[in-house]
Amino acid sequence: MMTDDTNLLERTIARLKDEKDAIILAHNYQLPEVQEIADLVGDSLELSRAAAQTAGNVIIFCGVDFMAETAAILSPDRPVILPAGDACCPMAQMVTAGEIKTIRERYPGAAVVCYVNTTAEVKAESDICCTSANAVRVVSFLEENQVIFVPDQNLARYVARFTLKEIIPWEGFCIVHDRFTQENVYHARRRHPNADVIVHPECRPEVIDLADGVFSTSGMISHVRASPKSEFIIGTEIGIIPRMQKLCPEKQYYPLSEHAICENMKKTTLLKVCHALETLEPRITVPVEIASRARRSIDRMLGIH
Image 1 (tube, helix red, strand yellow):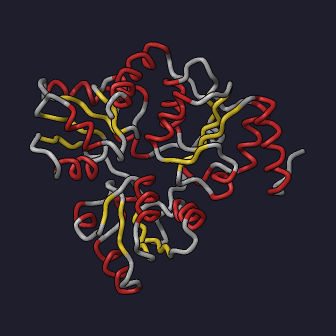
Image 2 (cartoon, helix red, strand yellow):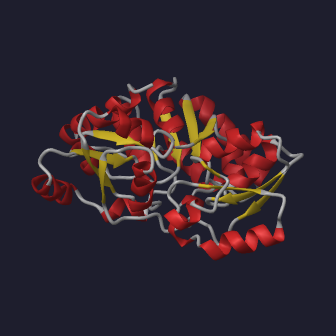
Image 3 (cartoon, rainbow, N blue to C red):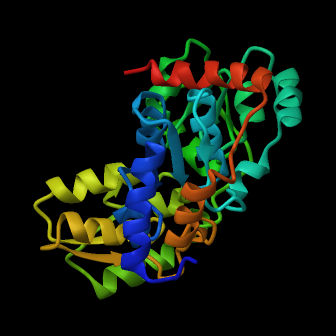
């Protein structure tokens, strides 16, 4: 009978991980204790690459549904387990494969770029995938001058700043990043006048305009580690702050908003990871035909350096 005792759970997870030859991947927004037991913590691009390249017979993916789907697509011969089976990404539900087919008819010469925060079905209907870390590079790589970008309108508009191509944004958004406001930035700067404001490209354009830097989650971590500054206002989900504190404890970090919490990212607990290792459930699978077409868009992204 498992208990909520953290030390016991950590020891049990370590034992089961060895027994099952499992690798544990965790997103930067996961709970601190979940990040602690992971073999790799990173953003979507890092974890996508890891899913394809790392050893291990089983992948335990501490994140949300589309991330585990991506891992399952890239590693079809290994079980991919999502400890919190109901951890979804609301933004990924804001566009469907059918809607991709419809918008292609309106813009027959356009390339379709799908953010990694999408379902496998949407990836299968797209030309190439991207993450927040490589979205500008992916769009620049394409030959087409017209680009349909789904589902995040804020990331699409951020990418449009760096290209002369016509970007056609879908009207989706991240429910965490889209809530940041100009007033959040003004208020944070008043409280911490010496701090750099760094935000995620999923933020609204008016918030990005007020920031000192715009980065993916791992880009934020790299920035604070390299920067001579000692104080930072962090404009993304607050789960990244404990990792920053661990990596650079001499610096100070302040959330742009205390309410920047993704409830779905917080559904994964040590108890659920332990249960996932014991039962190898819930397993995430993608139908072969969809996985094959989705993999083309992912592989095309991963092939861009």
